Image (cartoon, rainbow, N blue to C red; front, side, top):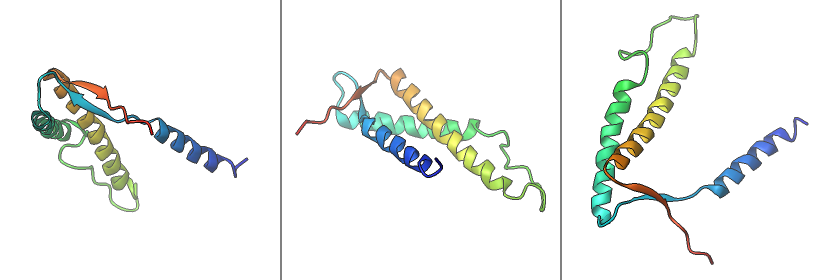
Length: 111
């Protein structure tokens, strides 16, 4: 049974990748250049806000000297970066929706 668990994980990842859809932001009567500029503006604002608001320790991680909690700092920093990434994506979507954009699925031509 243990031999098949990694195969199931790989199969699940491949199945999810096959179902992934490409999307883009659209708004009536707006050029692609204006959309790209609005998206960049939203990303910059979202990055600042996500960096400012995430993490319980705004001045850095609490210090615990060795041998206590060895490796804790790296786990904390990884979780903090992950939370900032997800917050930035949510805030970018929120900003674009407030500007009147709508996320649409890009349909790829069938061959």
